[in-house]
Image 1 (cartoon, rainbow, N blue to C red):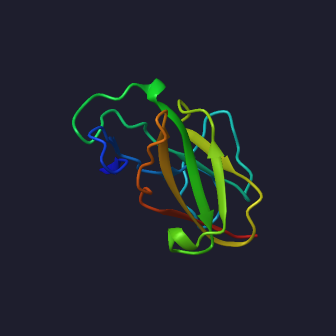
Image 2: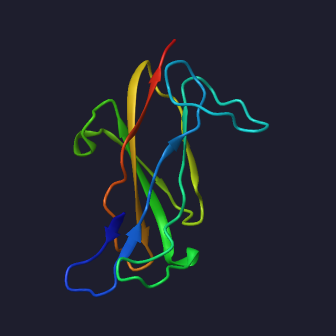
Length: 130
């Protein structure tokens, strides 16, 4: 469980952000997407929205403002070169397209309507083979 807090504030967001790669392509984690065939140079990330804050208070979907996806060939999250912002806090899927050959690593964090940010999720990876 990840917590979303600003120092000195009693209300924190507990965030369970488990990422799942659902893009097809050789060498990566994959599963089917009904009615859709993703490009081999893309990765679709899916997650479940957090339901409670770290202090146990419930968290409504409307309190999640957005998500940030950080990705790149670097294994360490802080060293990754790219970020994408998912502006819809109710979204639970994002596709990153235009990935070049190699292994790409992805992590996600949530930001609530008060600007509180979670820690980064566990990373997932996908290898693009051409």
